[in-house]
Image (cartoon, rainbow, N blue to C red; front, top):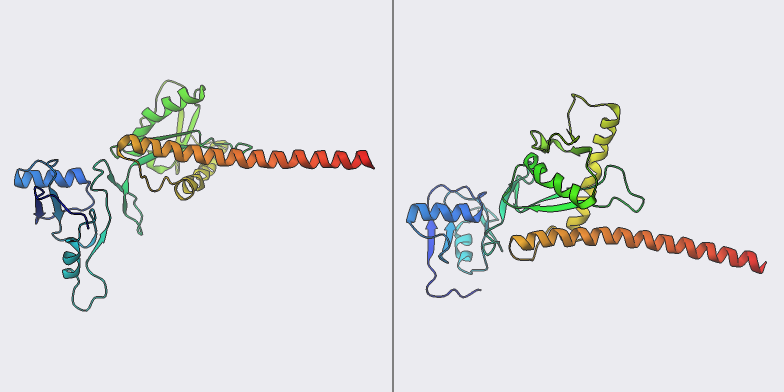
Length: 264
């Protein structure tokens, strides 16, 4: 258990609370109702009408609240305890729109890959952390110029999922943006590329599962950016090393075959 200084005050918010809101918004609710500074170091607890997981630092006092929340005849309590991001107020609640996972806590990350698969594998061309939980379609104005500066070539076409409808991509630069489910102005070639868009999904899965993008242990928004970059660098290098290993094996095979022919 973490021992809190005697100067720390614990405030209980008894009004109706939406726990999907971020730490900053919840602290603002307490400030408005109690007149307290949300950054004064106080500890805020929001429990009214809540059933689910409490995300708070390891404070043993929550265990009693969790035990009391267990209704008679139920095996599991109404409130569960999980270590949280109370020390990281920049974390946002991101709506997923999925029945099994309606939302999750973290920071949005934009991942861009080439439409055509590279010979060395599906490499990541650009990655960027997007703090503030922006709408997906409103990130193109920032991401597209960054990709252009990074690769040194102007983009002609962007293929994105349906969440990018109503985008704010740069105009007047010969750039076309197509989203999943779009019907107007879609040729057979664009249809093939829209089907190819799903190739980015396993890349995101590898970044999260194999290269630690799913859990960031670095502090602050600079840490979010660094974690996304490091995960992408590790992923790209893993593909390059695999390609080099295959190339080296082919070279060794050719050399051994030539030696056999020579000695025969």
